[in-house]
Image 1 (cartoon, rainbow, N blue to C red):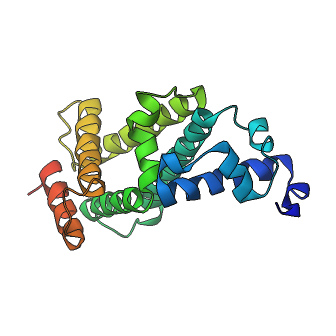
Image 2 (image 1 turned 60 degrees about the horizontal axis):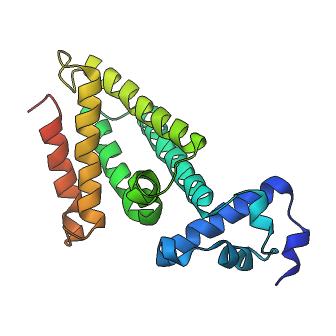
Length: 201
């Protein structure tokens, strides 16, 4: 074990544990992660992680919550930093960015939306809150896009948000689960999906 455990501040250790845990599941899936292995990887005592996460479920929920935060930043960055794009180009850019995020953060994405937490685990209140807020952020953007006639302004915003997100999430699952193995087709399929969703020819 290294001497690094003497150098951590309380907040720094939590962040370091989250980063190391994310790396471990990226390398070998959720089964590759244990509190003991995590402590060894970070270089702290095997009881130290329990000061921040009471068990593996809480740790997985924290990783998923972090993923939702990153996803929210995608929405904000696209809507705030790409003002030179047309509405259609803006939405298309977001879809491609979202798919790239799901692809690059596969294990985290699986935790965010998969049965590991929501079906067989126990989502923490923090995770439930941030996941709901994340969807409401998407809903608010859908309302803006309706005002710009990208989506049918006569349809309920909630239903558009639900169905468009379902299409996007389903596309990510197909790619991540290996259904579409020709990765060079991702961009073309994503762009075609956008054309199918929007209220324009």
